[in-house]
Image (cartoon, rainbow, N blue to C red):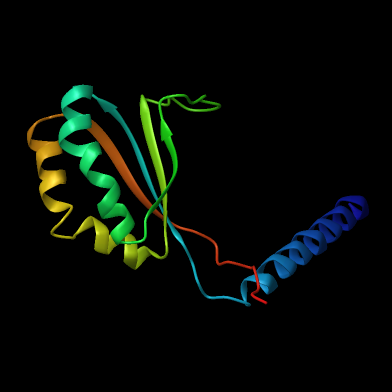
Length: 136
């Protein structure tokens, strides 16, 4: 009993200490990036590339989006992984990503993607951790 209590106390201290150190660093900045994660299966790659992908980069750039990973080369470590392609992008904030998603520039591309059944996609918007980097 004493041994398990002592181990629990040490574990609690260590976890609390780690949380304190980690979250103390977050207090330095409230800037929280966002990540847009798209997982899917493209049905018509040629049409999708021409009608959607080729037109997307300038809109991403306008709203502050940056591609981090794009492709089909992935390894499922756990779960079903029922997707073939992925896109991961970083945005300045959740608001910036939502502004892109609801923009009048992106709306016709999204509509064409859906109406033409170029693929089946799951799209997630994730809030990132605040930056802990400090300027000069």
